[in-house]
Length: 64
Image (cartoon, rainbow, N blue to C red; front, side, top):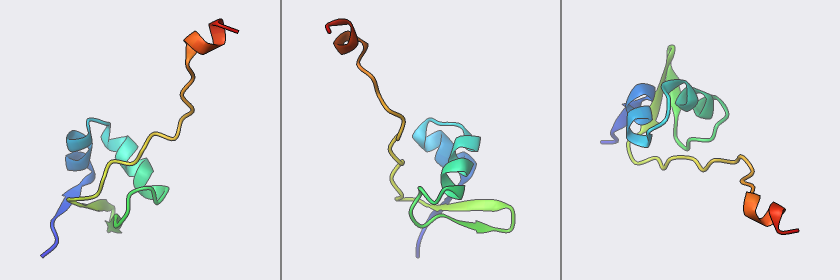
């Protein structure tokens, strides 16, 4: 039987906010997540999605 987490449980596990988990779910970035009524349900073994924000290396910019 598959185990699931709520958005708040996933947020605690991944050290991010519950709202961020909800946004990731609504963007289909968490594989296997689905909504039951108003609640997002996330597979226990789902990996934390990677942060897609561009990372800049300020040291490289200063060396130019």
